[in-house]
Image (cartoon, rainbow, N blue to C red; front, side, top):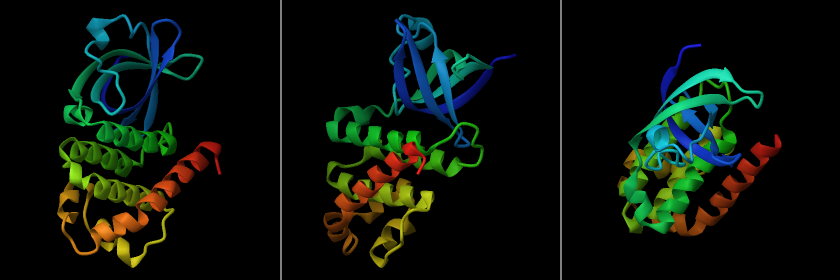
Length: 206
């Protein structure tokens, strides 16, 4: 089978055997794919520069021929965007990993109809890359509400209206709006708990 070249957002990596990695990534149509990167920990030519890190936007060349474990063979990876500024701030790193974790837990192999999830993750990482420190808590609530709404598991209340009127890419426009910080102070912790419960339930199949 010929090689396939496609762009992905990396959701998770796991060490496998001595020098291999298993990579889970989200395609532009919302399809989660899993890859075996043979010798990735030793190969600077094919996988150099820390390209296979969660949150990275990459281009993969791979074979769809599957191993017994259901993995595609990853031949080569190149970095498109590492959202470098995220890694200058611990709180941003932590939340970026939360974003891709949400996508990892709800995305599915073979799903060709979840482009909205790919767009939400991609736009969120891009915004987080330039997000001012004083806007981070607002942005967290913005992302969580969008995520839960897309998953169909949140009841829409009037206080949520400003968050649903704006895409996450335009989250900065929430800063200074009446009652937004009140909503963050009042609801962020409970909404975050709802997200954590939901992704845990998604894992258990409930």
